[in-house]
Length: 308
Length: 328
Image (cartoon, rainbow over the protein chains, first blue to last red):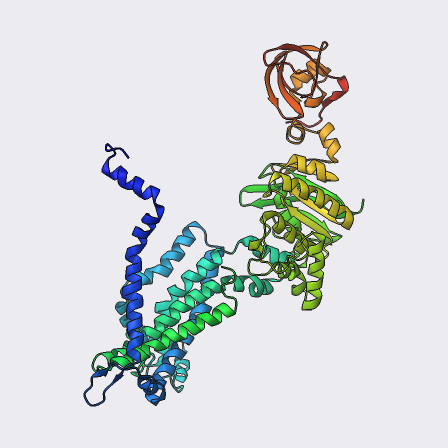
């Protein structure tokens, strides 16, 4: 190159001649971030879970042992925490999928122009306000003197709510201190994370596929089962990864709404904080990771990603 | 001719827009019937009315003697080959073809055997294990055809099925489709905007414009005896003479059409000037100014061809000047 070439032009041309260099420059910062900060800390976490804590000194012993996992999986109270959290996450995910489907289907198939804008606004709007504000708002809504109780009484269904609240496990003194309340708040807070990927998956299903299915003799129910559902499955799986893992990891909602029994997130918080038992806290957090890996493997085997 | 599909005064409106405007049609059993027209002329809507994806706003459609209105697509004895093929991306080629049979509840072994047969019919034997994404455009087209045929429909509807293929493949498929239709003796309803395709493949052609049927007839009839200036221009690329000019040349006041290949250049006839020439391979397309009229002529490129600007004489037989009943 001649010396007259301006510096900026020189840089552009140098990058143009070596597209690989540009890619490297663009990818290095995110790769460093993901690789070291994220994957690195995850591996550190995994390593921690194989250490143990000395019961007398309260110090972490940096030696490989399965003692912490034994403690996690044999102590009844710890097992309860795992079971409670996983059941809640599963229930929230299934309910979110059922509620999200019609919304996502409508948005993908029928909503045009203004309706589509309204859909996005409606789904995203709750994400713009603070998570804590929403959770406290729900605590008030679900309280004994709250609007939900008042409304249910108002339409003469107070007996139904009382009957529900008198159920073992699901019930409680009021909705705001029951598992049902925790479930409702989780469902509300994570629902957008289910709707959006589902809608994106359904959006990619061309209308002609549904017509082809009908043309070949399939009534709408059969078309739903054989065409829409399989093609929406990647979206359902993506959405359920969000709702499931977000519920597994959350430690704020069960602390504010629900019975005071611990969820995984709260257990992690307690063990790494006041108790100082980092290995046990790490072992607790490994559980959701393992569950998600198994879930993805099952989804892949079920053919959820065949249409991708 | 036994009627397979009958349209009686069928109209279809989408809000304010009229897509199909009072169409009457009879499609015969075992016929290769083409619906030809420019985009937005209502031909695809007519096909969708037969398939059942749309319901007519007014009028009556009969499919093999049964009233079509109110019958959903999944209960109609017709199958469609879609323009974009509409193959199910999550199913293998074999399962795509067997889809209709699976819906009917046919056992797996039996429906797969039938699907294999259908794939062999479209010369795709052995492709059953692949996914649609692994096939070329032409192969997908054949899979769509096999899928529509395997359920033994009473009529096959084809919506611009060759539109996305390149020229050579398209010509091959044209031949294959006509051969297949003869072999099966099945009613084919074929929608296209390509007049060459319609003329070469169909037994009869309906020419659509702005939601109406302008003319129905055998290809040769449309070619030689267009009923209106639109058909003359769209189907044959004919010269259309205004009533004034026709009166001068033929002595009757009506629109007239003149086939470009019927125009002779020689020592006799009317004085003309060559204003343009384009080489089309076997033929040369000349634009002539004949006493103020713009006339297009097609001459064999093997013979003598005048140059642009030459003064020549243009002639044609009186019988080649076809007077049309229809107005503009």
